[in-house]
Length: 106
Image (cartoon, rainbow, N blue to C red):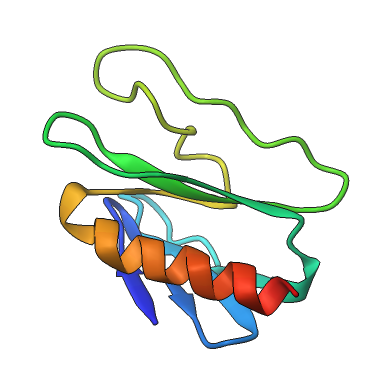
């Protein structure tokens, strides 16, 4: 199951979530998270004017807050390794992914 984000993708194989971001500079390693280790998910659907996001919360961590400003308002910063901004056209795929991760969590 794949979700195409604004600058990357999220892949879920039933057990592992892989977040791969595509930056302009050096390519960082993908972030892999086991679904059973996640304590929560945050999902905000994209709209006509704003991108949404999918964020995964891990034990002992506080979810990164939404940024302010004109271009990046309403979503976590790009530097957050456990989230990815999504366009409106990816809302359905993101909802399916979040539901599958929640089901795999237990």
